Length: 177
Image 1: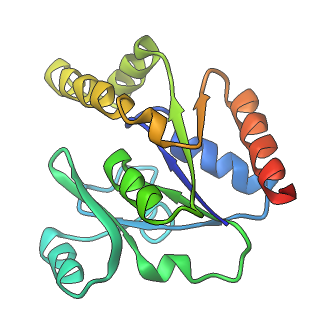
Image 2: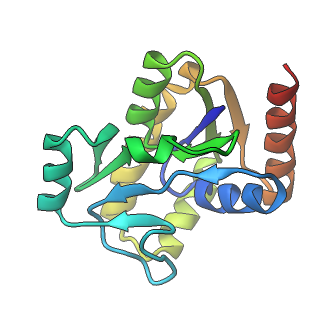
């Protein structure tokens, strides 16, 4: 089973996925990105951090099952991340890439994570972003929300524990069916 988590930047996808891994036997697919590594991230664990030339080389070698430019940076999921013996693989994919994968692979499950705008603005400010950046991200978030109906499940991240429990219930129901 392949589960794709998506939603606007800052809604808590990484935190949710990390919590899920603590509660369920899941394999997390590590994406490639050209963005700068944050202080709390580890190469090969959170992302594979590469430069744009390396990313373009991987594109030219048909390495990615999906890739997108998000803001000024590229993000992509390598095919090698889908070959795992674990029964459940979790992907964290930008909305355009997620909808592309969901449309091409009807067996993939899409979960759209969202939060209220006020909370999203607060989180983006906590990351140290300026008003111009936040306004661009909020416009992008609204654009991404227009694709919400292309996902199998929509989960509002109001409280991390409640959100994780709701997603575990979704996964358990999927495993039973």
